[in-house]
Length: 372
Image (tube, rainbow, N blue to C red; front, side, top):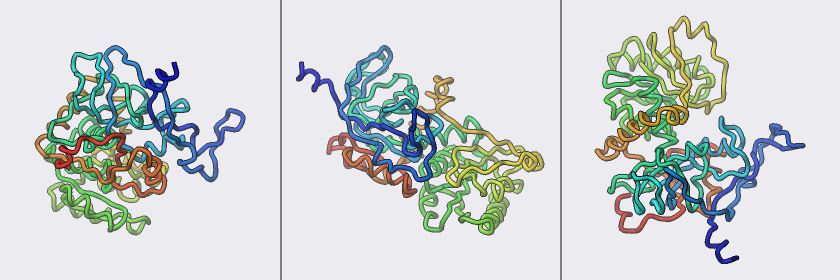
């Protein structure tokens, strides 16, 4: 019946086309001028999910939106989902149905939709594998965990799995005022390491200091300022007891900064983790890596998580312990109402997305507001 059909439907944001491409004759062709994201996203009514073995259905309260979600809607991310799709990899909310012995109706949880290709969070309900669901400590507001996957999982994978960072390490992170950058500083400090943070402009220097960076320097936008940054980092390495250079670099910028500065800041046999390319992709000369004896590793946490579920669960449990003891404090920099979802994508489309952006699908009850 019509009534049943309506009861079984829910609101979800859907992406109907990739904004950076035209689809002439079924072939994707890169556009010179991208379509605005607002024009390819819309709020639709779609069927509610049905429970599956070892899955839970979450009533969504908050979904995190970050730079990769905007890239994905443009068709420029490494995973290009079949259209139409519901964006969002990070979801927090309350379990309303469970086919897993580890979760009960009413549990406050956060989850990642990695097994759905990192999509599906921007909907009133979300079906996720119980392997990628974690309970949230009681004193932590649901909104504060809505960017854990995109930001903290990426950082943890770079620092621990790839970089093997410990209390004796010196870490350098660029793009340090962004989501992954801030998470990297907090996690590295929680692991006992020292951290040098790099930002593109002076206005971005205070957030990294506020989460415990030992030094913050500005690398600017040109080779002169890149060189000055390199010299400042090298001097800081000596002051911080690492005269040979930093042990691990978490690089979300790449571009010219990589060759102008980063390769010279790392110690022999140190590791550069490539997480992103906010300054665009520039060729990497193998001769330079050879002379400097640098290891460069691509860092994709989701593949590792899917292939090593038990170790990944342990990694996330460690992050939750850091949350509980206050070593890391995920911030919510802005909360955007569900119906204004396009505003969140536009922040990243216009390169204005600092820190953590969260879309509120359903507010967590007022008696918890005091935690924020």
